[in-house]
Image 1 (cartoon, rainbow, N blue to C red):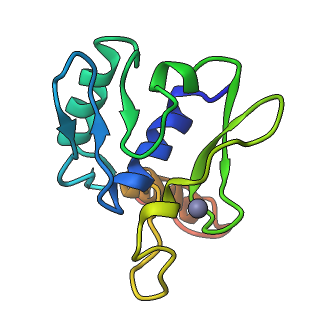
Image 2: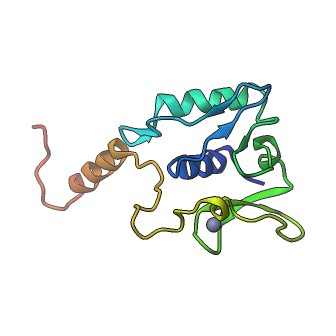
Image 3: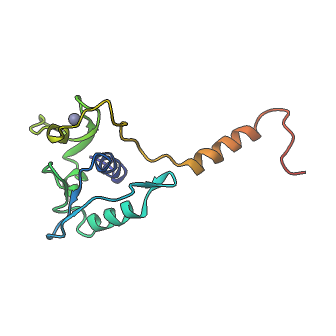
Length: 145
Ligand SMILES: [Zn+2]
């Protein structure tokens, strides 16, 4: 079973390759732009996720795949890296994979010329951690008297 975080991470990776999500109830396709902002998911991404969650992911799926987001969040499916391109893909928890990774219909992927999609990096959190670590250095005077 994939967690919401895993599904969001899965979507963020594919969005970076230009694959939109198809929304339920004929609401069309959605491709957030930008996907990340200030080291976290952008407002556009959160809007997109909200639109998906309106139907609890029911009938919403990444273009080119057939598992709905709701199915991905069910115990029958897992998110794992594709053997061919290392992108996150949806796999049945039991049984065998019957479908190809969405990279199958991306003529430009895998490619060594485009940067590998990444996960959101929380810079602020990273900085705070770094600052805390620096403050723990023995012999360093306290920042504030
Ligand atoms: Zn793949």
